[in-house]
Image 1 (cartoon, helix red, strand yellow):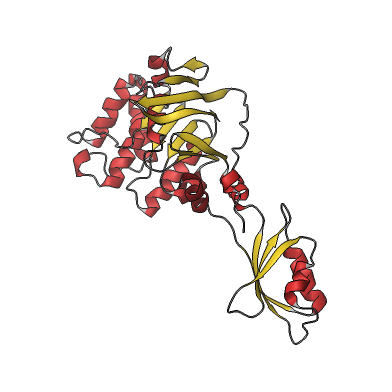
Image 2 (spheres, one colour; image 1 turned 180 degrees about the vertical axis):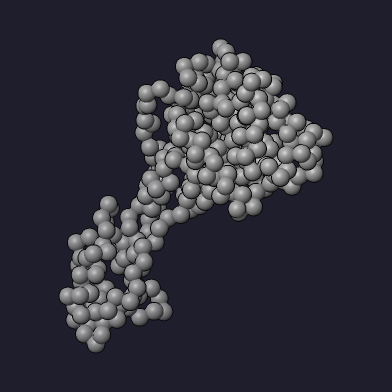
Length: 328
């Protein structure tokens, strides 16, 4: 199958009312090196966006600029109509941030650390205890809350990092590798939590676990060498990458070959090409014409010729394939 990724086109940006985050022509230079290069994208409230890219692609740099931890060389980020350049202090109050390295005060007990984070984030005294209880419950820290952070496993330390990011009930969550170090059960719990939060908050998360991004996110951005190279849902990205439908089929002509199976398959109006698979009798790779499917036509053809259809598989492009093709 001919890949269309060499001509991959970024899906046109949508314009939403009440946009929560708008990244506009953002560039960040470190000396002569461009960490991010004139990127633009938008994220609306109630959307969970996955940020994918290889190490050094610019994911963490972009997140640090959005959260006002770092200044851009050029461009701007607008959050609810406010520029990060003009009012960073006010914007920080609206953001919960889990950095990649998850800095924690290891000598503090979990519950004391969450109280400290709540206080510096301006949570009112009247609401302080309730917020701590809610974060302990949501992040599964009930049995660990009185332990010192240094005594926790990596997975539980990550949960504490998530709890501090959410303690002040921010409108925006920026999560850099939020499931790092979690076991499979914990990953499912955090995935469900993020999806629930995404119903009312804006969430941007980065991850190297592509299956988690696909399961958690409404939309995926892929960045490579500082540029956005793809933007869309996982289904959209796979469809654009896959090009024409590709089927593998195996036939049993049942002593009634009629016309040669290859030529007969090629005569179907939806079929672009048929390639026999070496070493297996009546086993073919069938490529459909653009935007057409040949599944029904192949099935009807077998019925018409009294052939048995022993196997029919559609070869689907995986998100991992898309990622590798776009970032190599």
